[in-house]
Length: 444
Image (tube, rainbow, N blue to C red; front, side, top):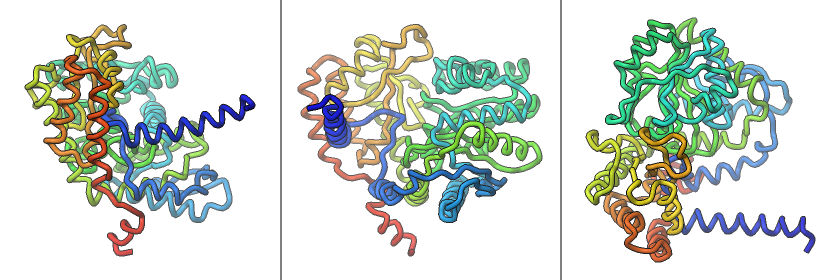
């Protein structure tokens, strides 16, 4: 076979194998991956023509389409406006932008727009070692692309959270234009309301990166950043919020200050950082918003309950689970120090051999140069919760993981049990089985 053709055949076969491997044979505990319902998947399939289209242009201060530079937009405009309004209603805000293609893109546009609005390139962020996303950091998007000057929040390792009193002193001393909360290792609500007043003192905008916890916020658990004082919320749409891959920004137009900020953010979206906004995902995002309105509270509560159950169970079995004094977590994820068992990189690989998929994670007290094998693993429970796992199922899963972590069984032996356990949960819960079922539910 010609080498070119052989590669095509290999591509098709690998794609089929992946769907079976990750979709049917693995248990997914990656904290940054969501699980779409059959209805959301169907809506993606029904929107294939949109994947080929462009809709460059400008939005108004409600987040609606204002001006487009292409023809053939009459239904695209309806779609974007409907999805924008669904998101605004779900999160109780009066402005949103759904054109972002990822959570990192949302951070890019927001950080750029607010640095222009504030005329200030300093940003206070959670240290990368303490859970911030790489896009917040001077080594990533914020520093290397946007040229922002990063200043670290004070962080309390025992509390696994920002220290509000010490951070207030840092903010007063440095007078940043932006104060950022949220992150990737994100166990407990950040002190937004505690630092709102000091943000006002120095004239800083507050940005809350909700990529990991957007579904929990929609479900009414964890925290409510817009009501607690955040000016803007950035997020992806495919973690605890179980929609298609993409991003969004939320905010409230309240006064001249926020109007200026919104206009700068919109300018940073288009024309500064995007052209094709990946329109094919938008109808599916709207269906996911409906599912979160209907099922989101129950899903969020069970997700946190499962995460707390796992934290307590691992702790009782002798593992070092961070956040012990506060119940281990209030979100969908836990952090476990596995240094004495070989380290996070080693354990993540052993678990992968057993078809249990999670990621190694650097912990706040780790040597920051040892990123290949840090102390920790990060475990997320949004996927298994949506498949129907309850607390007893979580304990059974933890037992399988413990057998590998403690070296009691070989991963190849445990893999058989993992595949059998996965077979017990063939359906996606807390969602609709089809678009027709969703329409019937709303009486359409």
